[in-house]
Length: 219
Image (cartoon, rainbow, N blue to C red; front, top):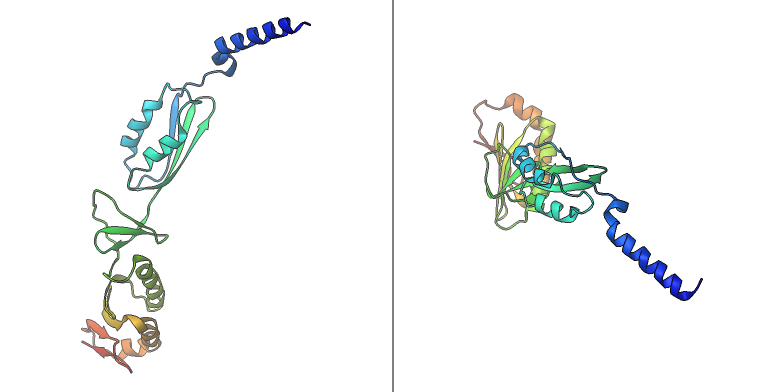
């Protein structure tokens, strides 16, 4: 076979591929968008309305990264998984933030200790933590530590406010005053005598002050 004939065959093959690309590769028009998630805070209907605009588009040519970026612009969406399910389905799984604590009355901390902000504030009954000098990570860790201690005596923390070396801790039964620097030690000491305290204390006690070097005061 001469070189001229080989070149001619190559050119004809290129022309054939060019005009028959879609027939060879095939097209995959999207017929369905599947959404998976808990949808506690994300408006599922509004999201469906946006994503249904992809119906009819070629599954091969939609930009999954761009879709992911646009979906995660929603304040409540922590992450998402986008995939093509051939022949005709765009599948999307959403993972929402799970608000666990209210931080400084302006943002949330999720159940994994990550801070996030939502543009439209909503009312959620959550424990709150506050500090102008300590990071939210340290306050989150403090909340977890003290909650684990107070759970031993069936007390639930409702709020922690930090200022200087002072902590004001409100539980479902008492308010505690304690120094931040020795809070773990003081609560551990209090827990050890709690049963005796509960059996002998007056019922109208509202505040327990743990700032004393020995013992504590009640009000």
